[in-house]
Image (cartoon, rainbow, N blue to C red; front, side):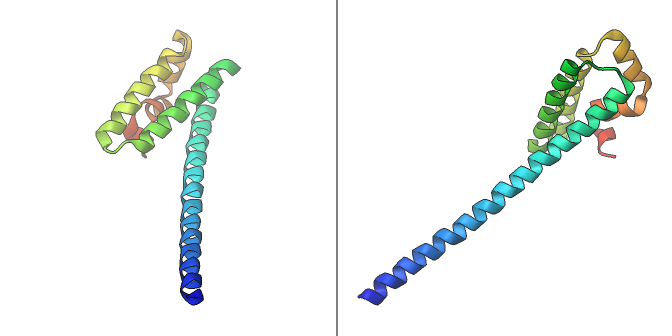
Amino acid sequence: MKKIVSIVVLMIAFGFSANAQSNLKLESDAKSKDQNVKEMAYSELRELSSVVELTPELKNDFLTLLVMRNEAVNNAKTYEEKAAIYERFGQKLLSGLSEQQSKKLSENKELYNKLTNLKYSMK
């Protein structure tokens, strides 16, 4: 009887440890995905601020907007959904700029398309 109980206990312990290891792997994958989203947003913000002069408050707002866009694109299932997200967030980004800033950004076609159009950002 003691052997049966010890075998059952060992099986349960092994099951818990295997499950814990898989949960740790999923958590680390999620953290690395979040980090990539933020790195992409920082990169895009640096490119934008090199073309257009931004206040610290506006930089913070745009960083939040870019992180939200990148997360939404990562969670989208189809290309059409991703394109719609890029268009929607591109309009939000442009509405946050003044007329002069928007004109300056539109003169830089490559960056403008990268920030507002999914097709150009995938290249």
